[in-house]
Image (cartoon, rainbow, N blue to C red; front, side, top):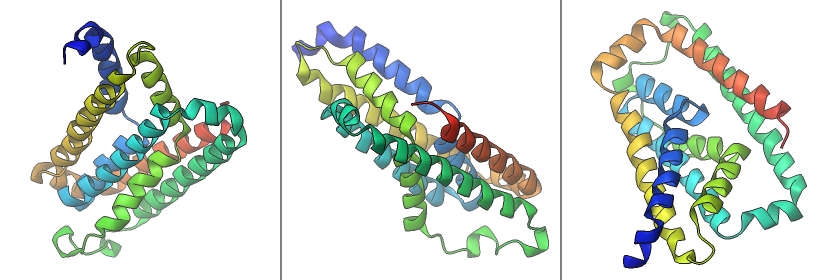
Length: 212
């Protein structure tokens, strides 16, 4: 472990950047919060697990030299951008439908709804795998935090980010699934769903029109 000591300041900078980026509001964070509020802790954690899986898939690819593949297959990234933007617009459409639904037309109460945890997991996975910004974030983190003379630092860098990601995403799922928060959601359900629809639509359009 002594070989890490000279690189700890650099690692702490990378972990701090990852912490800020992960905890900042974005499609993944908003989806976890919305799911946890409306469907409960286990559903929020299932979606968070999917987000984490997608995030660390890009982490491993970045560590394996994804930047070289991007230079070779640049068109694949453009296709991914289009797919990600359309996926976010689809999530906006779903949230808008939920916002337009009257209370009398709402689904069964939370405790009577069988949670489709597998589907929520893949929803979280899809949000992150179709987000080109996640790719570039990991490429930046890996290049910033891995010295050329010490490639063995890479597992520690990614491992630290993994721990932070689990704490942050799962923490959001736990925090926003507590009783008072859920009761508040029931009172303001349509406003919250409408806000979610607006955010997903904005994020989707930004992604579709962004230059890579």
